[in-house]
Length: 108
Image (cartoon, rainbow, N blue to C red; front, side, top):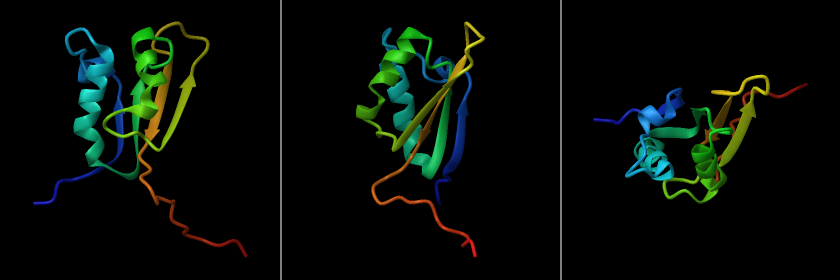
């Protein structure tokens, strides 16, 4: 049987899905992403909620390029500056070596 892949994964309650391992938030997130990342399709996205202004998650994000499960090929974070809590998201795109977006059209 074929294992399905995902084009888009939204993790709204990040620490609910990836609880700390023995108090270590970074280990919990990495452990969860090690399970799901292989099932993300090339070019697919994982969006994580509340990543920029939570100090523990931000420490993980600052080191994401060296993550043992990836690393992601592209990372982009956005913040809602008018909010104090749950005010940001980070998008990880899986871009393995040699990946390029397909070209579907040509301008005249």
